Length: 271
Length: 349
Image 1 (cartoon, one colour):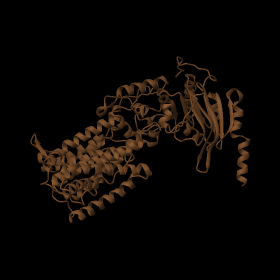
Image 2: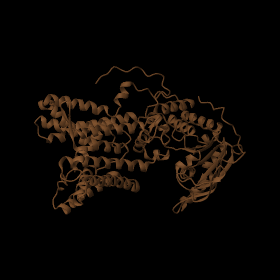
Image 3: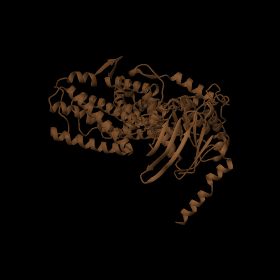
Image 4: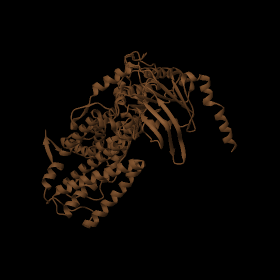
């Protein structure tokens, strides 16, 4: 099973400029505050876990980093420079790749076409500019093999793969296309225990090979297995921001489903 | 249909994913079902109607097929891209009328009219696509609107300008002979009279097939039809692709319109209504999914051939032409059921 690619540079964290940094970022949808005062650092070789319940603002946060939405206040820095990511394409150009919950794959299309979708390799000049089909098929097969996914048929529609395999194809695709920052939106949400394990192993391997990983989840158990840094969101605000060594799994779990939340809830219900 | 079980799958990576046998893979080709259907229909009419076997009949069938088939290429690409165009039938008439009326009213060379019609057809396609993308309203409704508008315009503008329901005869105008040679000539090969539309039809099918399977744009067409949101997320220009597909239908409508005009010299302004469904039916019989993301240009060509053979075969057999619609309905139903089965197999998780 895919061990880490050991030849990749292992730059220990803490040094240098963060790959991506958010400073007091806020986002409003009309009168609704989706996100407010969120600060976050994504360092090379680290897994930053963003935890939170449904509606906590996790999706909004990823949409800002991945260029689907723009923030309304605060700063977004990539390599220390302030940027506005106006589209998913702009975000990709900065080396930020997002693996969405729905994986952004087209179920009826073959695995290899999905792998290269949006970044197709072509040859020739315009009127007869064509896809390098055999090369793309070989590359896709090779890259997937590297991650320990041995598909019997690279031409199979991706919809026929299991959930864990599809997740891994999506991650492998992001890594292949030069991602420096990998945003994973609930990668284990719809997977069984064994499949989740496979995906978590890839998450750890990706970080070890030098990528900055943002791991969005509502499962503190999964987060604690791979995380270096935790950010907890609640109703659009940060309620926790700490390093792995400063928190135990129990504390993380109780923070997520803890007393604060219940108090707010009972207060709300009373109104 | 019984078949020997294919050889056992070899060591699957995941116990739930099994290798498809060659036979299974062939069966899941979108155009295979329609090909079997086409062969069956050919044999059926070959046995049922004597005159169906003549070369003259073959020539007519190919001609009818090509007139439907050219439009079916554009419509099939659009359907693979996940959209509909109900205005495709009357858009052909609109294009023919535009060229004819423009050239006649301004006493211009017919080629000026032809170019104006091209611009018009592309503009209609662009507008359809742009409205669909801008509003997010299903293309079924948007193009239903443009269908009614074009149908009305065709009649109203023609009556306004000519006082009749048909455009004036333009056969004595400058440039007509060349335009007729380009869009509506015929030649004889191996004893069969072949209209030039048959050649264009085959050319368009080949081009569309190459584009779908071997170019970036083809990849995008499948992607925007299969899952537009996913496609957008990985950087595919969804809007441009879909608008381009609508304009592709516009281009085909222009081409068909020019053929119509230079074959008959005049255009009946009420023509074309109902043809949009025949184009869609040809695409669906050929294996295009109504929901997009699946299908081929070759399939649409076979769908058009099935229409052509049924349409003419029933005439040659001496039956009431009312049966054409019945046959077409049966084929459509069979094709849809096959498609459903294919889709369930392909996306089984």
